[in-house]
Length: 300
Length: 293
Image (tube, each protein chain N blue to C red):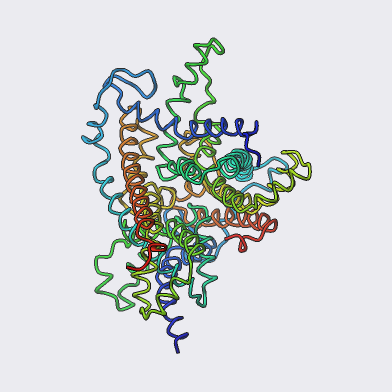
């Protein structure tokens, strides 16, 4: 590669900038428009500046309870995040050792990742519907009277909804774990073992601190993918809606900027989580750099 | 003894994830397949063998030949949207990945610029769709701008709630899925190969065609699989950006579901799945994915 920048650099740099504007431009348009004055409409120009539409969101417009959906999505996202982190790290460790059925788990994850969401969603909906049918119609024959009594549906935010979200977040978690362990120096573990560490101590004091920044990354994926998930939840969430589902519903009925205000609020949560996670990752990396190695410092 | 213990631990570690996939992915797929061959009436599914889900879907298709019936037209349109999106995301994604991999020289800048491309992926798709309304709408920025410039007299209607806006939104949302795997392949290309090509007198274009593209092929295929499967099954983007007016393979399933015709929805899901598998296996013939991950 020569030292001077070639012509293609400038062309591609320009293209890249155009792409970034294309990526962010529309989003910033609605962030600005959500501060429309009370008389303003869905498009530019701005008709004054106000927080009117944000108040509107919190008041609710009678048909949907945005606040409740907000809390539901937050709760679900947090649970999905924790489960994704724990299961991905555990499975990642298992893949390092190797086990029978590793290929099956790997292909299940890949298939789950690229399966059209509507099919997964439909399948989960069918599964729970059939379960409900069995419980309601045959529960007593199966001797499950105590369970079948008053059974309405097993579908819900933290049953079918949680499962639907996990089929989307877990493959990302697992792939990130693969990426981590591809670069991981196995000698560190051996050294710990040679010094007499138990497997748990090796994990707790050697492996985990090293992979921690990337584990935060898995958490970031877990939360944001769940917070914004729509297609997989659509059929499998049961009677209550998450925030993205409410938002999608609003696109067909709302003609006022309160939908932008809601969009701005939702994105604000996303950005808050993203930047917190990135800051934590950066902090951990810097910490590793400072304390990670005592090479060249000599013995005292 | 130790090996046995090790494999037991590995099983316990991988088990929970396996259980989640079994319960919420594999089992549901089995149910979709089974229910697709069930009978149904106006309001419930009947557990009796019947191909009604399939025959209803293709009703009248033979009679209407050589004209395409609704379902075939819908699939043709889905494939068309899918192809357009694929071609655009591949071109844009390749250019972006090339810039990041070969032109950005410092590691820090590479990370910063990659993050800039990734952040929108962590934000809501619906919001990123809605975000086009103030730009593309009848009174949107683009129409106003064109009118002010005197280029058009009446607002362009095809900008929003049209196939144009659907493809635009697809490209906006999913180019990321192309950038990441292609970048991943490119970053692994040994820079010496490219220097060697230059030294041997190859032009930039020749290097691109003969060195970079063949070596980036795995990334291209993986990105293509992502984009194609997402677009083939999509019903949200097509719904919102098409003003709920454009039919697609995914939308058929959604419509059937809303009508509580589960076996028909399942039959359509099986058909969609079949088509998707055919496309993926055709693509994986080009490259062995297992080697790349």
